[in-house]
Length: 512
Image 1 (cartoon, rainbow, N blue to C red):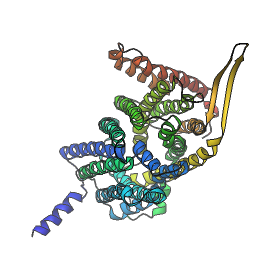
Image 2 (image 1 turned 90 degrees about the horizontal axis):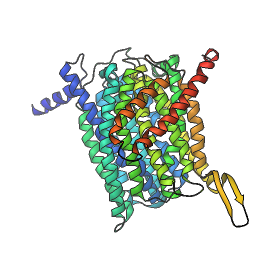
Image 3 (image 1 turned 180 degrees about the horizontal axis):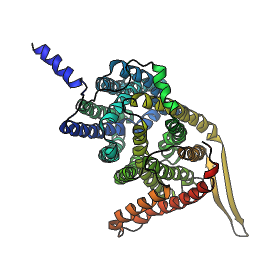
């Protein structure tokens, strides 16, 4: 009897609902927020600087770092299986919970690598484990997006996901800083590599707690054709011209970002020789600004459009990328640390908008009841393209390791010679420049995406400047802090005005 009650309770917990009461909907929305907070916290401890530093401690090369960064994108191919499971089982919640929990438990293998394996064997096992976790996570993620698409009202999507991102980022900030301090303290008296295992274990605990909130998200019954063939489902998004344009933009954007981003931590640790604790402080600065601006971007997305937010925040991030090569002239100099701070401030502001708007626009342009196929098709192409970026980045990083390009101004006189570097590129600097160029083209492709409520970028930029000016008045007594935030926004505002004028001039000649 007790067994029957248990089976009935489990079945009821996973059964989709034909309709939800307001109370059930609100509980589900709160669970989405809590799941996001803990998932982001887990990611902050199991990715980024900690995973890259762990791989370096195992002896990974630039190319192996590139492979490690590419693995999560290659794993998105498993979204084909996710679509099949969703359309066959038609119980997205069960798929989400089972695959999410299994994907997170794979990290037990990574945690025990320092005890069982070191060197090349350890790196190989790390890659296999990250791949397995990413495949399982991709299947869960596709089903989650499809389930959430039917649950979250479009008019409050920006507000909900900005709150989710803001709270998650706040928690991640504290964990990243504590994690960096722990590693630097640990390695003074212990083997550094075991410290990362402790960090990853704590991240796993948070991830499993987060999975419990997935159980609390109610699922609405799926609509649409039952038993449709997989090729037909996956081809529908490409027949939708507007969504096809979104996929093209996302493919170029993901390629640009992932050509550069996986090597930011490597650049600071190897090229600039910074301590991991200082690196985590810089990451914390980025996360703090992300935290401060995610709600701003959420309001702008709800008021105008996700496309408009993407255009402005994407431009800001490209400015941050092209600033990296100037942190060395040709080596560290007195402006290196201030520039790094500025770069991380810009990255935090921009990624808050990019992360929020890119997820929202996919959900918004995916028809209800068909979101799984649309999300899978988007993820397949854009992530396969993105996966090639860090692989190519690793190859290029090794190629340019012994090459350089510089332009100098020199002055010679009887007493001394003076040489001033106007530009100095070597090693990873070339990657950042290539990423900047591809990123510019991706923003051009974004102009072909249509979204209800979209406005010119300059209007969004004006609103952003207004938010920043109003929000930083209380900081005006802190010398330079207010200007540090506003100055780069003025630069981008001018660039957007120039681009807008050029776009208006060529509007009549724009191809379909």
